[in-house]
Length: 420
Image (cartoon, rainbow, N blue to C red; front, side):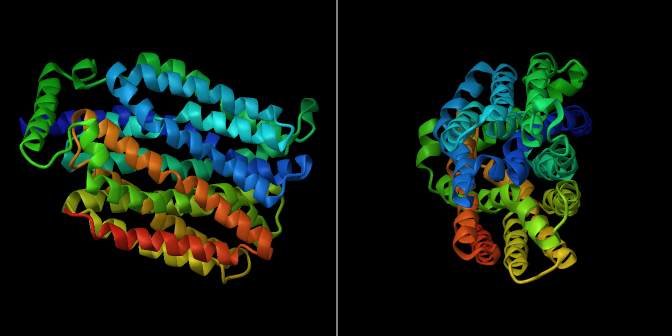
């Protein structure tokens, strides 16, 4: 039975993780491509640092507002249909960013993009809890979430190349960037309708014995949870002290993640003075380092069964490195500290979500995951605006990077207060 379950988990990892990984790469690119567009768009449309950072961050206000309702709907109608709907709508809005002509239009479309995408990430995490037993979850989540860093690796060169199309076909480079990176989400949305099974019993690539073994294992975990301290209801998730404490911890991750996603191209350009295309290539380096680290840390967390210290130590390393970036000068030193910062930040993700989902079950899992992600993602509004305000006030990124690093390190210390 155990061998059959292990075989089923291995098949699910091979079949699901690469596909979900691809979806999240496209999702993350559509979130952060505005950071590369800003290299041309800000000057072309007359956006100040504060205008840009407000528009970049406003995405998370609508995202937060609609996250919980969206994930509850997903749990009721099924991941396949709802994730397809999300992808098609956000792809159309993302491509529509090419029509921005004013600050107001920028704000409206970024708000609409957040509303369209609300529920995607927590929906995927919820989906993974229906496929992977607790002992295999950090590795699965880390494998899926390497999309964040892989998007940074491939997104930089692709975005830099698209910016170089400036003037082709009568469009600016930043307009080409939005339309070319937005439309793949629409195509993938239709593929999801055919390719994503809801649960093990729907997977034709599992044998009946494997379907039974995996379903039984997941059902046993759910039953054991119902006899202990699992959160199984929407109300329970919304009133759980542990869920809210994890929400506070998670808040610190998007603060740093999106501060870098939206501002790293400009930080790298200031350090290097390079062209748009070279900035895209250089910006990929920190993400490449992070991709390796987060898989290693996620696998070690699963092997040992330990979550909190993996999160805490990663946060402290990342936070210290962000702060140090504010004091170094030149291309190589800046890339070294940014790489260490992204390594620490990305390494938190797998253990964090494995820990956060370890005491959630049923509809409570959908609501709890959405609560942690939605409220925590307010940090995605806060982080870019910290960098933008400080940069406009001081004409430097240094103080903003120190603040971001301090926030991330505080999250690492806070997670140690969460009960096992």
